[in-house]
Image 1 (cartoon, rainbow, N blue to C red):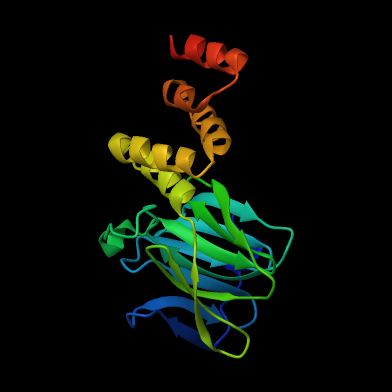
Image 2 (cartoon, rainbow, N blue to C red; image 1 turned 180 degrees about the vertical axis):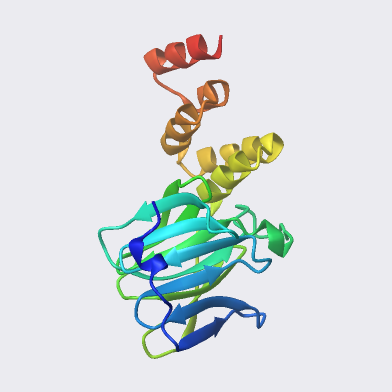
Length: 212
């Protein structure tokens, strides 16, 4: 269920944060929580110190992400796994967020993955292709290159884009992420695709039997 503080009145002051293109990306109401809006207002993320609730525009809960380590910020992005692919803003269906120790991502179905570990707190601004823009505590803007291949595969699977999923799966295999891809595809009900990445005979037999 949604956190109980949503039933309480909002604080009377707020801070507005804007993205690289000048669009509003989040509001901060008092000290309670952040509201991270998608650019077309179809989805919203409610972020507290250790939780993120992903909701539709009418606040219907779609996913709940709980982190043991404090969450520092989040931003909506479109993760394709390919820096040359440009997608419309309404395709921003991946929430990129940072904790004190990691940069992670969450899909609308609640799946969470990790881009990388970090040694200092960062505050997400945008993810453009493979480039992750963030602020440090001194409010300086930095750019970090991320490997978005696995996240792009999960995003393609969420949108049921099978050709893109197969293409990105091969890229993940080349990047030595075959085991992670195999486990994810098997868990999501795609044993016939996971079979392409299995190397152990027993696992290949089990996946082949699941595939029929």
